[in-house]
Image (cartoon, rainbow, N blue to C red; front, side):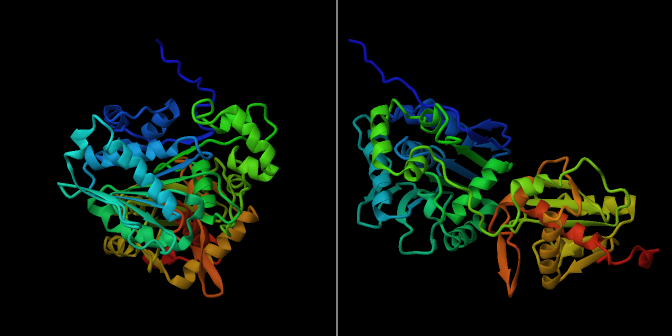
Length: 461
């Protein structure tokens, strides 16, 4: 008797895909592990793991992974494979799986527990020291101390959601308070560890500010952000259901989809089954279209100043140069070790001063550059606020252009979010990923706008 497998109807490739550069991928190790414990994954699920687990220099190429796919397609199996491989194969000391509600977090726990207790998987159970089943304290601990915890975000702001791998399921319900707490707890692991954050969800709601932001980042492209989104472009396209649901024909029947279509409103059906939801701005002030409108191949003709910035974790840094009409992104690279020597070389070659946010993460780098004889203007917190507001007005008014041969500015601009500062605002370095290219462009543009807000060159000749 031959086993008749269901037909794979749904599209296996996502509508949007952003894959960070990687030397190799640990996905094969995960797939071997998954098969050994009796898990069968679809091609689209294997693709998700391949994209997410790229490796570069012993670190994850993607520090963040975002998967958007309609409900019941099988994202839970992807997470179970990632978490169990992390626990047993990667030997991650702490993995935290969180969901918006207790029942969803518990369902994930029971799915993982089901694989551990499956006949033939005694080799896994032998490594388990304890299984915690108490409501709200579900988790698995190995004899070597590695742990996998399942938590709900319902009653907390996100405090304690840390680990080598943090899974934020039901990301449509994430808030800025959650993200601020989670990112801050992971910052300590970023220096000596190799943390990775997973966001998984169906399409965002109008209130899903964080998920809307993540979707914009993913669609724009970000070289540290793995992004996969299954959705239909519109409800009218002929293959809308197939394009949005990779597990159609496996876990979701076409007959049931028609039942959903009749039972739900058009808006609810499009969001829940087709992954269609409007892009609601959260006050970032820059859309992809607005930013692309100022991109240009022109270089600064009479440059006035350089500017630099880095991320709070100092894993990325950028340098920009500007004249009164054009800003060019000169460098955007990992870490900050290269930046001081590069800034000194640029000074020796062009004799142009630098601008740095004196109260920001790059402030100490500005001090080091100044010690080498490079003239540096340190912006105050008030200067940074004025620069962010003025340059955003210039972007919307198309009063200057940006040359970005590296291709980093679009993702930074679109992912940037505002942080209130008194009655006004500034870009939030902790709220929208790596925005160091945008900050460098902002400082260079504002410094080069008359009256020039840099130490004049004449003071150094």
